[in-house]
Figure (tube, protein in one colour):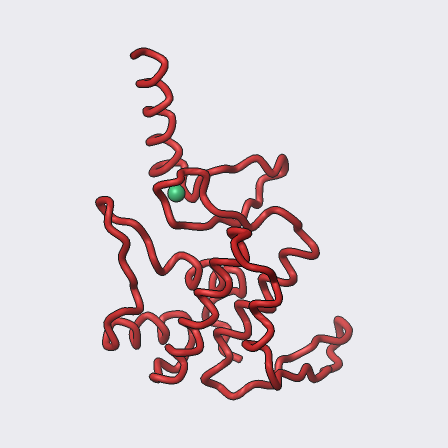
Length: 166
Ligand SMILES: [Zn+2]
């Protein structure tokens, strides 16, 4: 398993690969050549099959995290995945046994599951309804609402200010 990016970084990158820029939804995986670089940058192989698996996982995960789809939506993406235990000085770690092309997609789903169980509610859509991005809240108070304070946080504050003063 490549460890170029943390599991959470892989999950967020996949969830956030359809950003809205200047009011238009983009897809960072739409262009095959750009998608190859994008996948390799995440520690993947950049193959056509890998892109298909990541796209399928993205649609399902975005729907599940937004609450628009049930978690069972993810089941087909885990078909045939087996976990193999490895004993390390720190105890047992479980490694997913999947073909290399499915690694990124399966990692994203396993990370979604771990976050949902251990840090319930910390993975969520940005509170700006014009933004398509997601965040993982690591703050102690668990009150972060924006994918980025610099972008959506300030934009929403400005909007509220404008509405109050109208
Ligand atoms: Zn946002």
